[in-house]
Image (cartoon, rainbow, N blue to C red; front, side, top):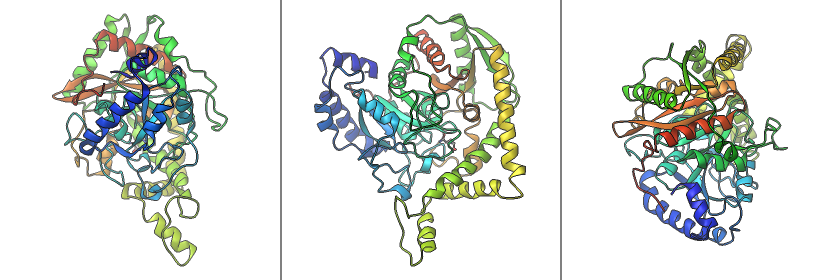
Length: 471
Ligand code: GLN
């Protein structure tokens, strides 16, 4: 069952929150040893399920939470040895709001360390597997969340998206994932990687389920000064008729997609045309360069954000005679990819190189935004691939630059702050293919409205459950 169907059954008294929790726990125990989507399970789940008030809007719903989002009393590792034993004394705002509406945290899902990666292979603990093919990655960095939703180990999940980490794994695992407009969901309690680019986003197997989460989580938060005062109205927007939209498609400079991705793109254009949208070819000239700017700016911010892990405040602490030895030995526990980013970040921020790299990347970011603004004068939505090809094999991207290239289509939305959603749109062999819709700033509801039209018009033909369902 989809999350909103579970919700309806619980509301009608046909299913209890405890029965839902038991069904999912059983399934996680059976399937997760093979998939490895979870790092930690909520041991108090059944106890909490017994106490849920059934008339709350999210009563009976379980959420798998990416392990870089703080959960009170539940270990939050960010996929890192540095936080291996960290138990937050508070909930992230997004989590607190979901709980207040009756949802329960099922467990914490695997990710690339601090969100740095596109496959979960940079997790300090283990890689997760793709439920469609266990020899392939589920994507990353929110790979555990995507795998959990695709295998129905959880009806809903939270991820975080700094450069594509909600959308790319959603696409690799055949589910929906939303990166909201920057600031729509509070970042309070999200372990910081690159603060100016990232946010928390929902993952699910239907657009209506994304809307359930967004209505509960989004909105102004006094604990996050960058949060937006844009009250969410997602479920309401889904009931409105689809306006006659103009849909842009970018082709120039974006070649090298696999045949399945090209086919899905053409098919989706047909579906949207059938729904009355006007398709138009548009140009976003700087998009192909976004990747280069992202891999300067994200490491720069990471090198600053990660300075707090020195063994003196929280997380694990290594032994050492002198303070500097403690700091050095503690920070030696960062994984290779994290160290690489801290080095790149400090380099591009260092005196003499700052102007050549960081400043130019920031200027480029402004240009990319201006181009997007102009583009959204011409069209209301933009369609792009989410990734150039479906899920790649575990171990298939040993070269860091090859791994970075996976993010070609996703980083644009992060550099501009625009909302973007990945929807299941086809298959290449047995592997799911996702496509991405982008909307103007703050128009997240419109994005979901269009994605729902696609979901309904295709009668969920692209939603496959390779391992069956929990309920
Ligand atoms: N793959 C990108 C990176 O490694 C994006 C990660 C993310 O969105 N957290 O930075």
